[in-house]
Amino acid sequence: MTEDERRAKGRTRRLAFQNLANGVPMEKICTDLRLSALEVEQAQAFVCKKITERLVMNRQPPIPCQGLREIRWNRRGLLGVLAMIGDLDLSTDLILARITVQAFDHPEMIEGASRRMKEASAK
Image (cartoon, rainbow, N blue to C red):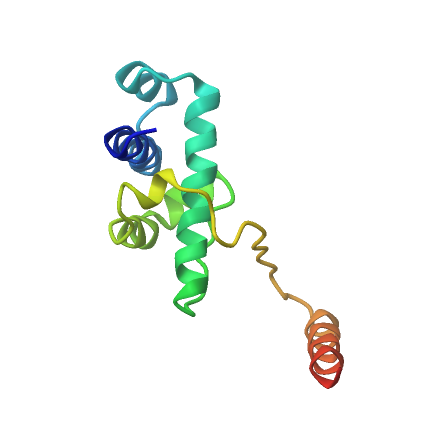
């Protein structure tokens, strides 16, 4: 794949995500970008992972973007980070492929996580 093709792929992923975040209907995105609904959903998932990867690598807290509702709710922050990611970066594989974000909403969960981290650092 040439560099121009990679840029075009990244640009398409960016446009699909931006349009979804801004409330454009899926059918319109599919028509305008000449993609299937599945390809738009895959682009959305990939861009969310790239945004989370960028935030984790810069030691910033991740922004929730697990579904369309969260993406639209947090669109300003997500689109702000997306603006810092180049089209070529959006066409390359993830560096941190397995990032998971967990919400600790119960005191026992916090205690358990802190205990496991202490045990791991002691080894």
